[in-house]
Length: 77
Image (cartoon, rainbow, N blue to C red):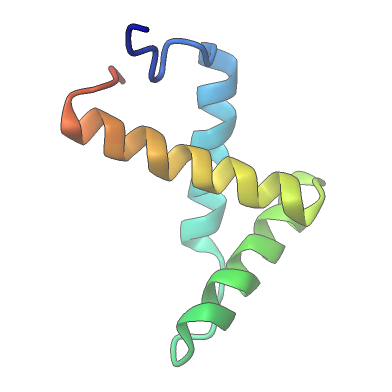
């Protein structure tokens, strides 16, 4: 089966991932505890975008995976 990384997601979906990640980067977190930091940031994204925590976490994770695949040359921006 040929690789389809980044092809299945539409531009609107990718834009939503990017928006979620921008909120994630701006979010206040706990800089002394890595796990609590990520949890606090994901909670902030969920609150800002009016999503559930699970949806926010999925958008952040998808954005990070998409960026890794771009870096590896498996997906296009």
